[in-house]
Image (tube, rainbow, N blue to C red; front, side, top):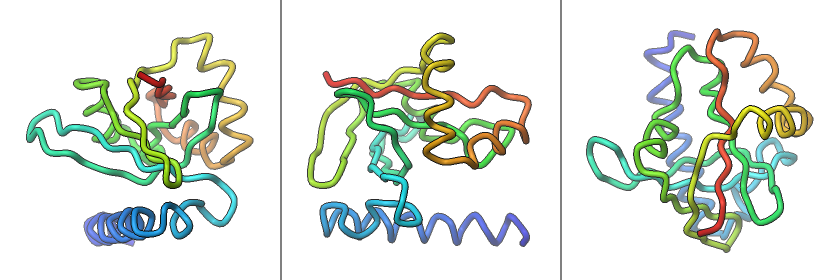
Length: 144
């Protein structure tokens, strides 16, 4: 499929998922394929200042939430990742629970510990990493 057609469709599907998730406290849209848990991540746009929300697979890790900035193995980081690097204060919603958190890129040791667990959660992450020369960032959102 032509990526010029796919990207607008993906944006529409993402918006619909975010709306359904919010309306149902995650009962609709709270999992991917009925298996992987999904959270809503809200970042502040680094250029616009507007709040942007994405539905993302996450790994619970104690009181923290772990995300993967894969962008499907693209050569560039997703915009949400670039936004949280510029402003690490984020909102994370898991089900009905909304928390203010501070996002950071996992250091080398943390990534080595978390990456196998993330691949166990969603095997496609390993494929995505093989498709790109960039190291896909692992993001840890810690409670504020």
